[in-house]
Image (tube, rainbow, N blue to C red; front, side, top):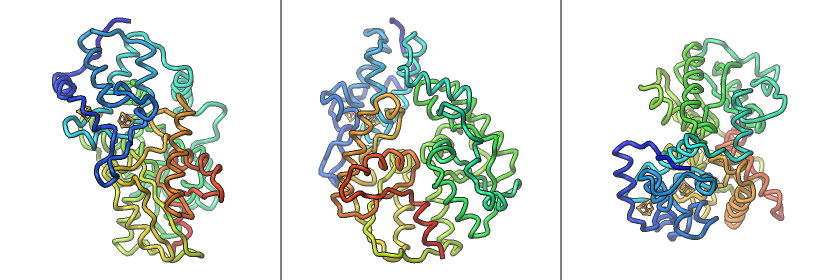
Length: 392
Ligand code: SF4
Ligand code: SF4
């Protein structure tokens, strides 16, 4: 199918600057220049890399190659992990360029993969990527926790779809922490998905509607701080919502690790000790670390917990390896998502860790499945759940 992607001059110039060096597929010296790009791990030649996709984008822009299902299947192998963005010394907007390619595929009549079409259908029907009959968005709230809600609070907890419907231990743990600390907060039945599944499948216009709706619901609540337990949602709010809504939001947006770190510094949050001493390995979620530059907050919180010894994985922080849970990979290419999760869990197990920890419901979901295969079996938790267990 012929056609061109629509990019502005700045992005075209950025694409032109790609030197095809391949550095985008590797971490830096701290990680021994080990490979990091999940796309490269699948294809093993240059086309399967950010640099390769830059050449694809250029050829599409110049009308030299047609849009096709094979380009779709290549670009959807990218997990949007951002390792290329931090390791390339030349370009910094790779993931946005991939999204423009996906938008071009749509505009030029290339159908979504069936699994992604179903996700989009679910989004339009239920404002969440999941199908079937969904319980109410806030059905996870226990009767007791409901009592702590206050409709006009300073703090708005934006829960996100994974913590609302699947990893509800995370939302319950965070609401429990707020309730124990006596911090009044609100949630909203009017919350919609953050829009990431639409944006990361090239439907930016659709994702903007979700941004407008969510921002409207939060503004109506009068909250001044929005706390989010999912890094993909907080990335949408911090990076894309202001861009789409043409200006800064009227409220502060924090990932839960940033919020808890702040409470700790104010002396509001005090952490005790684990019942048994434990080695813990922390997996940096891609959209939290590389996406938002948040590496220290989770580590500072963990350092306050007694009896906890940190065991850093070989590839961590900026050089963290994606767990495979992002960019619609689990729906489009579940085998590759499993492969990545297995790699990550084995690497964290090799640190001698008793517990694998993350700060993202999608990472937890994906790593948990892989950890079931480890012997002895490793447990996977979200940092919020651990904090909930050691509150003083
Ligand atoms: S995207 Fe950056 S790191 Fe990758 S090949 Fe191009 S210039 Fe090199
Ligand atoms: S975002 Fe991650 S998976 Fe996608 S090309 Fe960059 S390094 Fe590879």
